[in-house]
Length: 303
Length: 325
Image 1 (cartoon, rainbow over the protein chains, first blue to last red):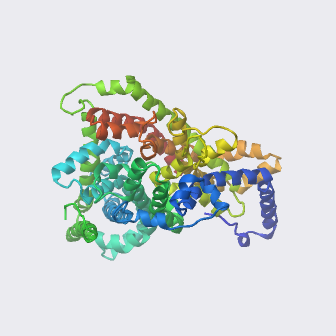
Image 2 (cartoon, rainbow over the protein chains, first blue to last red):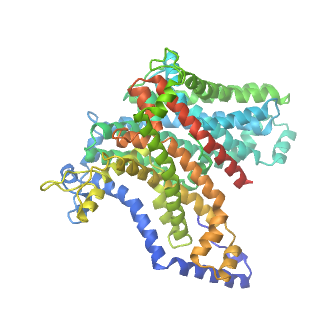
């Protein structure tokens, strides 16, 4: 995200000017008050997570009797908390972690496939009712998922798929479609029509054009939406609480939330559990930051 | 395949089966579309749109309409009671607390989060280690609200002030260090609502910072240079150059955070469960629908949420389009 000034492309005189601007800017920013303010915010924002992270490696007794800041004068280290949250007879976090994976992958792939088809149709085909349908789908983005939950639950019970992963896959997919179609459509629309025309001249049908011409170009948009949806589903609590009440299928967020409600003072378990649950989204964030931000911006009105 | 999976193998098999099933649907559609190659677009287009239209109708449209309908029925959902549920929401003393809290959330979160995000974006702009400094603030955005709530619940932990008991929550420890008495931070109302709001601000500030930082970097250098040559100071620079230039981005950030805040459920659910006068509409919807088994009131709360979201979303989309154009 940082934009380095390409000095080589500017004429020599401009270089001097640029440098003076840069040095002035630097002077402004190295003003001690500005730096201090930035550091204070950064520390305030990091400290809560840091405290819980330290605690997750402290013995249960130590967590319960002394503050985590005493760790600096009296450092102790244990992996017992992490062992306890994975204990199959108690918290059993491994199973919930697996559930999260099983829920998330189809809930990302299904809407991506279906939305690509729809976005292609909207961008490159002519058919009656196109604009009305597109606006209708776009408008569906504003429906809060709360509005849909109870009727959907009744529907799933009637269909006999209540308490299966299908409830989550189908719900998450449906909720994702309006945004996915919107993002992909905006992207496909930007592909130069000459490219499509050329392929058509070569006798390529819609299927061939979609796979050979568009799909390779679509990768950044697919990645942006894919990551947004991945984190949305992985971090979701409401949809899972509603449809996945039983421990066989509920994700890690539900188990962590339950733990916080039923054993709110078991900080050795809560701290380790919290970090097991955030390891995946944080890794995704660190590896794919660029796409992540893009997806986040595009998806800002979802939900 | 459509049953509750219980073993690890079951789960993984089901997962791949689901992905394959939808891949097969897409394959079938493409295969049929291939038969129509060269003919009119119409058939192919409807074919491509069929699964999406089906899923949206069943998954969003029908449930939405159904909920509006049910909001006019009683707790069990079997007797029409007109607008009584809505009357309850706007007159019942407990529900009024819910509305008050929702108002506090929606008014405070966007402005404070945006202010902090903007300040930080300006402070670290072009500074050494900018990317790292930004990642620190942005990280809370990637974790779940549940995990964020656990992190902050630990910050707010309270131990009674007696004998040798030491505080383990940082906030109360700071209070003690300054000579105060520890406070039951999550139980004392209305303080607890403000402390829950702080968690949302903590999460959203990173979003505000990222968007506003991009907007600040997009301000042309010559404008800044010209202002500087005119002797504009740092405050004037912010007031007359930066702020007007990033105004559209600020509005998008404010409205986006407001929408997210209106729907906030996870934080309240995980930290207090809505007790001690901390409930908000999105949480009250869940409590009424699933705990108190009051379907009608739950539905009405969902509809109120919907109605509150609409104007902000419309405004947001308008601004978004304007800033894109």
